[in-house]
Amino acid sequence: MRIALLAPVALPVPPAGYGGTELVVHQLAEGLIDAGHAVTLFASGDSRTPAALRSLLPRALTPLGLDTKQAALPFERAHVAWAFAQARDFDLIHDHTKSLGVTMAPAVQTPVLTTIHNDFTPERRLLYLRHPDHAYVALSRAHADRCPEMAFRGVVYNGLDLGDAGGAIFRARKQNYLLFLGRICEAKGTHSAVAAARLLGIPLLIAGKVDPVDRPYFHTRVAPEIDGDLIRYVGEVTGREKWELLADARCLLFPIAWPEPFGLVMIEAMACGTPVIATRLGSVEEVVGHGVSGWIADDFPGLIAGIRHAPSFSPLACRRWVEQRFSREAMVAGYLDVYARLLAGPPRPR
Image (cartoon, rainbow, N blue to C red; front, side, top):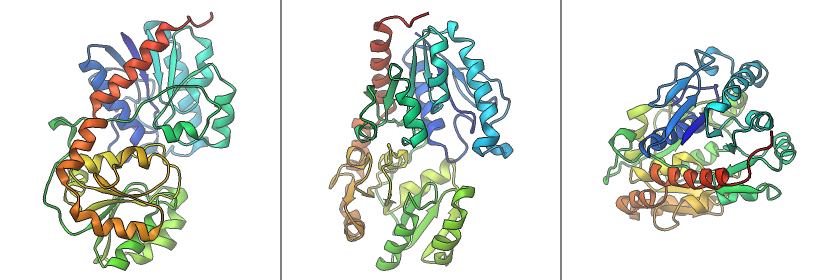
């Protein structure tokens, strides 16, 4: 099958640091190639991929400072239009660009599938519902339930490369620190992680990026708590440093305050044998095995109880939980099933 993967151009594929969508696209490209398919990746020119790379833009936008919607939109629109102009080269286009691919899909006969990686803002919800015949995929059942009016072609969980090349480090022996890893913002609950660490007297490492829009939150709710001893901030981490932090942590704290569509960091932690202590929102109940690979809490006291239980969880059970449900191969199989059903349907109108 000739498959085009259409990635955003805010970051390269794979991303150097934070960037869940770009990482998933990278894993999917590798998995589809390993399954014998011809894959072309439309992404920024600084991407690294075994797929055939086609790039209109030589560099990703965010490192260039074009990280606001107003600044980035003309470049993103040109990138997607350029990719769709080559639609005849492919049997299927798999779009990961939020909404631009949806708006341009009616102009081509090649089937187009869009994975929705983010929550449904009012603007996006309206746009998606204006294109009811478009093929959509959600990241979890909870994600799909956020917009029940849409006819999703399937739910496909994100997956990880669990081989040596994937980077995940499994460790059975843990150190006595809590880890918060991800974008630092109110919706992710960084302040709740800080409060839990202070209440229990257990060191907390905070690793992640602070977007410009979240700087007021960081400076008022998080930075005053950072003392370099009990609460430490290590900035955004990448590569082996990220995996070392995940592998050594007593547990990963995921105290979200919003309906997270998936939460890639949860399966990254469990792949390292590290349990996840999370709040019961969004996809958490589908991703974490309560009492097996982590703890799902309904409130702040529940988070505290989960942290106290963390040493009792088996690191091997955490790893196996991911192997059985969230491997790269499972993700690829899920998408190939959706591709097959999409291609078996009626041809797109001219």
